[in-house]
Length: 138
Image (cartoon, rainbow, N blue to C red; front, side, top):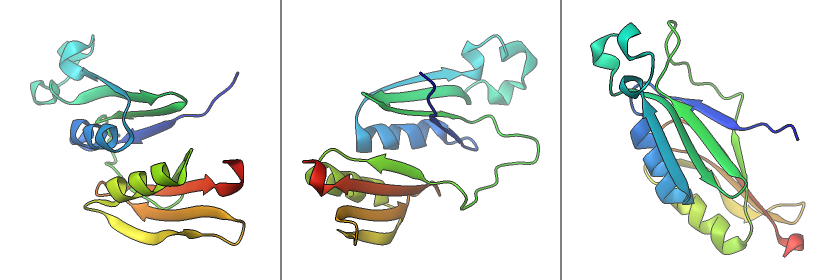
């Protein structure tokens, strides 16, 4: 089955960000550094500890990330958000509180006109999150 997964790019703080997401969302987190990869000899020594690839998984949730920024640098925009469909109201509230720590709660959680608990935030790494729990699916 074809899937789409989230892949985030950071500029040297991938380990910090992915550890933060693991603390917020739970799951299993793995890292591969540049120094642990076949690219080690082709990259400047200063990049040995940079994260080549990280994966956080928790059931159907998968977030991947890297410190490997293109030559033009890291450009954050507002065209993409991470949509987190939660399994309970309690989970939604806990994730919202944890993910918004150090960031900006742009739209506090509230019951939407379509009947779901919904809110959005920008985390301390500049990534936008939409949190949603469909109360009719309990």
